[in-house]
Length: 342
Image 1 (tube, rainbow, N blue to C red):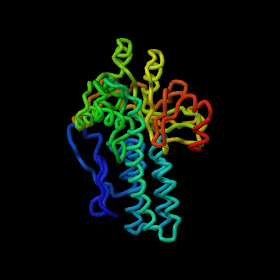
Image 2: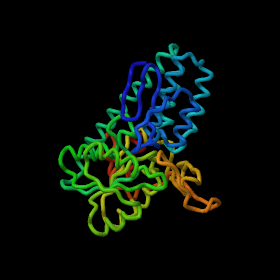
Image 3: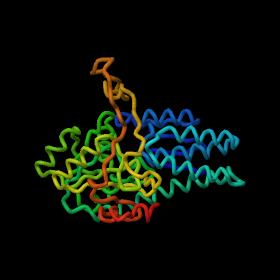
Image 4: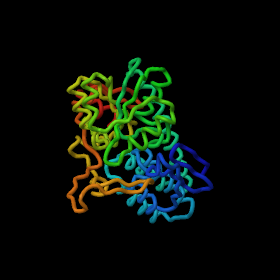
């Protein structure tokens, strides 16, 4: 396969490399990924994360394994194993469905390589269109709040919500970005803060519990988040804490926007209740670990509830900013997701 370089993925000498997102921001470390088990481990440990990036990583690895001579029966098993690595992120399912179709072609080795690279190119283009559509909603001198990480670390391109922020910054529309720390794994504090700094976008880092006070003080003009899955009725699954922000924004009459590619929409999932929510390890809540080491602050046997995602009802969302355009609440009520994206 041809060489490839994105913020978080690289193909060099027919080998897949991923940027270790658990090592950031202290260290920019690239990890080789040579097997399905290795990639699944990276995904579950969030060394590879972000719904679009997870799907692209899986597709590229499958294509490389096909080129190395893995037979179709073993590639089928690899598809099955990868599909279970991140159950909420529908981009992974969509990408694997397309790779499965490529595997069914007579020249499946070539077809899988071409399809994987096509998915990367499509993701870059989707991000650009999301940014173009979203920037029209950003008012001049905006103070925006974002949650988790939605930039080039999570996609092959400029990102989803952060792509919108970058385009708005380029048009001198942003005064300030409030970055939620995003507990328990601190993707905002570790990744978004790093990424905005790299892009030159002015930001301030806050604990998740500080958002309400900022909104009450009139310091937030809009909230921008990404999505791991959008149900047929417009409900959105995203990083835990997103629902809380939506409720706060609704109470304070602040626009709440979801930026995502159309591939994040799941027409087979009727509503948010039907979205599978991954439960993660207790250790992520009872302490913290990273390239800096580890610290345990809770009792070792403390019972823990640790869902990776929550669901924001469509009624709390001001607009779904997709590559295909901006969908309004009125259009969602009229069933546009089912008609246009189904």
